[in-house]
Image (cartoon, rainbow, N blue to C red; front, side, top):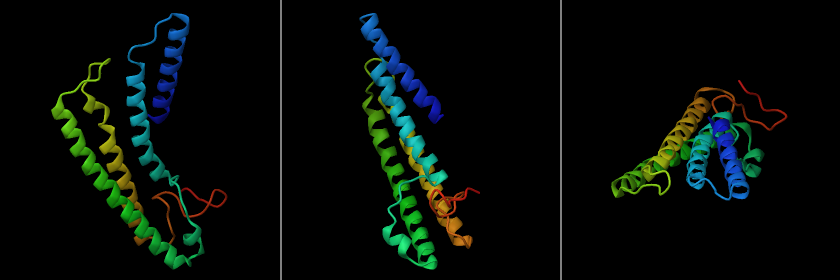
Length: 161
C-alpha cells in the first residue's frame, strides 16, 4: 500500500508536469490527490515503521545503561509512546468529526474533506497498538525488543524474528 501510494503520487506529479508544459493544461485534481496520498503514506507508514523497529532512536544515555535498566526503560518508552499514540488517535477523531460536520468539500475532487483525514486515526491507533505490543513483549520475554519482531541492536547486529 505504501509503495503503491508513492508510485501513484510520482505518476500523478509527472503527469501534471507533462500536461502543464506540453499541453498547456495541468490536471485540476493533482494537488488534492497528492495531499491525500501524503497523508495516507505518512500515517500508514508510522505504523509500519513501528512494527519493523525502524523508528528514530536517540540512545546516548540508553546505550550506556546496563541491560536490566535498558529493558525497563524500553518498556517505559514503548508504554508512553503507545498512550501518546492512542491519545492522538482520540483527538484526531474529534477533529475529523468537526470537519465532517462542517460539510466542506475538496474544491476539485468534490469529496468531503474529512475523507482525506480518515487515515490519521487509523495510523495513530495501529502505531499505538504496535508500541503496546512491544511493551508487552518486553515484559514477557528475557531479551530486549525494539518491536514485536526486532531485537535491540544496530544495523550490524539487529535480528528480525
